[in-house]
Length: 294
Image (cartoon, rainbow, N blue to C red; front, side, top):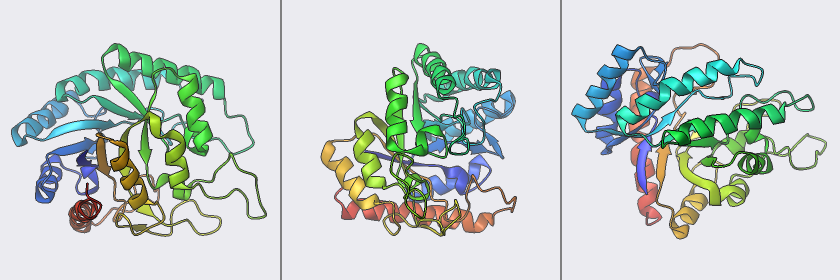
């Protein structure tokens, strides 16, 4: 296994992201945002500068955390926007030697309404094929998208989209209701991270590490994002099972301790706090892995 992380949670600019990564002692960044833009949305000259900085710092990019089909895009969004994102991402992945791109299955429609499932499958088949034809792997993350409704929804994607692989996020189940289970008086139960992992593990090629606690009643964001192993994401158990199964892929920290990238309150983060918490999180994660024999 190797360690990486979404260093845009430490800083907007790449130089400081690299500094945080090296302070932890790592040589990899999961690329998502630089200077406030996703890696596949940067102007060409700015991307070239980023690529040169990474080369000079000897930092590699094992994963693109793309915007393709993410929780902010309805399935009714013009598919040409997605195809343009793919066209921009592929040459940039090749320039950086990146093999995996994180995709999603478009935003969840309100439960009980038309989810346009066949259109989701059609789009994901096209997305996966375009990356595969370029020798790259598109992997779906269990976030606030259709595939995140339950483990069964994710498995249906795998069935309907040949070649689709999975990125498993340990904490996303903690604040997602399990739509495959019966409703009780309080609605659907929260997903169980370990149960979700067990259901999909044979398809996982990359793992995001974050931890948190269940949201308050009626809310969608966790009560608290915690250090790894201190919340309800069953990080210790999942890491142990990954180790015992011979998993040799990436473990990418996505702390959310100081800033939440899908929050929409518009508040500017305290970037000094973000930097310090990211480094602290990385070192705490290393210590947890050491305790578990990883």
